[in-house]
Length: 439
Ligand SMILES: [Zn+2]
Image 1 (tube, rainbow, N blue to C red):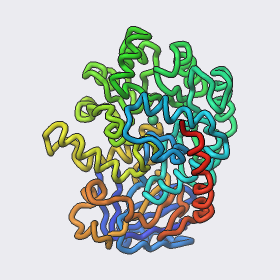
Image 2: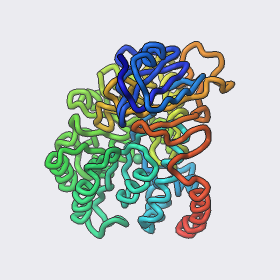
Image 3: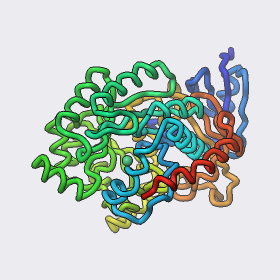
């Protein structure tokens, strides 16, 4: 007795990231609609199902699509415009001056480039905070990825709004416009403690509770932020955010670098999720988040690239490598940040950051978001341990196939939704515009 399904995927290796962290050799995955219905050996799955289509991927490692837990997609347009500077100088003298001239078309174009980059490098979902976020949603709608996004809320005008009141209205309008989209979800996103007021943060929390949305904020990124917060509000960023009711299971904080152990305990107690951005933190010399202590205390930790202006790539494979290596050398302990923990951050941790239970692993009931790595690539030979390869050896260049919601978005060098040559031409054309806005 066979059951009908839309698609059967066959692969030499399947790294499931299920609760037992099972790896299946000669495996099969049954997909119906946008959801995985069954996973097992190819023999049992192919006997159990009658598929409409079959996708035999051969000698590949199929694994869950990676989740980029913190980025600013459209900042791909600013990649490489200002490097080798500290955060506050980089932000106020180089990034904000260009961003005030951004319009919808540029944001959509930059976000589409980000989607092309992430699709190519095996990321299927991302959390995104930016200006004119509606344009980013349009890019994601076209590109086929999954997003938790939000309009950045500031105490000053942004290209999206003349005042913060209008900013809050935009958050509500975006929620109403996109809430039924199968791949686009919304969060309330105050930018940071140094770009908002207590009243704005309180309003963000109330709006998130009213609409039952997550909250994302940059918090505890640098010692300078801590100093400014102490000076302005008499508290360090984490206690300040906690006193305003912002720390809770609905909140994901990006960076969490300049935190005391007591403040990390507070994250654990409140169920707050952390988005760790090791490469951005290294490049801006912001510091090193105490991830080993967070994991020991049971804080849910995810992994992100941050924007392409401070990384400068949206590559979750190299981010995993950097994460593992950084914490080993910082602690002088090679057992610190083991490969499985780091892979968990980039998959299941990312699901927590996006406040979803249906992504991050290959198991029945999960969304069919997966990628395939070429196991004939020289840097992935021989195969002893797929988790080791994913974290330490892969660069993203081995990704042969990227699938979201059961739909193949990229296959053997070809984008199936994005007109890549046209995108390249458009990006080349806006380079001079970006340069003209640099001070
Ligand atoms: Zn950021």
